[in-house]
Length: 125
Image 1 (tube, rainbow, N blue to C red):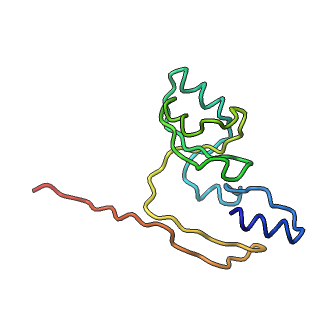
Image 2: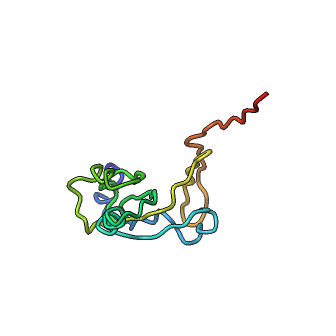
């Protein structure tokens, strides 16, 4: 990502703002999303509200790697990050597969399967 941002800067192109959860795709996300801060997330856990939450930086790309927070002990993953850091949060989901879709000027340019998880049903006999 840094390489791409560096190239954009050298070309004099303004860096695009992150748009990880576009409004046009909201109906396809199948999970609740919201914005918060690290401070708010920490307060929820300290007040005993242990709801597993996926969170990643909202405005500063790769300030830390997005991860699942299940309790206040998971906050060690973001040690040194400002508690005012804006977050994109969502309910935790189990992925079966993940695709990357690359869109330029509203036209799909590429579609790539990133990860697939094989889920087997077992039956007891």
